[in-house]
Length: 124
Image (cartoon, rainbow, N blue to C red; front, top):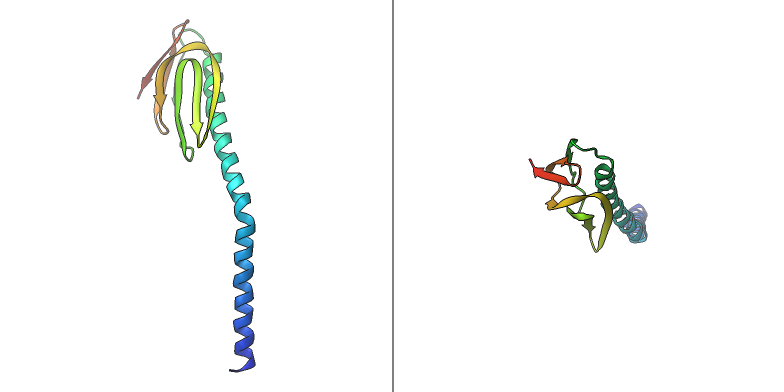
């Protein structure tokens, strides 16, 4: 076998071994970034809905569309609690008004109306 063929084979072997090591080194970092993105998504949805309910005025009607967020579960509205689970974690916030017991899956539009003492919800 010519020396150039051996050299080429060794070069490719070193290249693939280096690429495999790089993937193994970066996988924990990528997994951590994914978990942080899930947590951020869960907290943003909960905090946003809590803020929206807190800033509502009697007679005000708002349409809210909950976007998709990885493996995050539906947004749960019940009493004065807004909750969403993402993976093994659950994120909660309190709301100023009493909320109906409703589950809002991703991609669903929800119409919220402030009656003065509580919120009324309807799926579209």
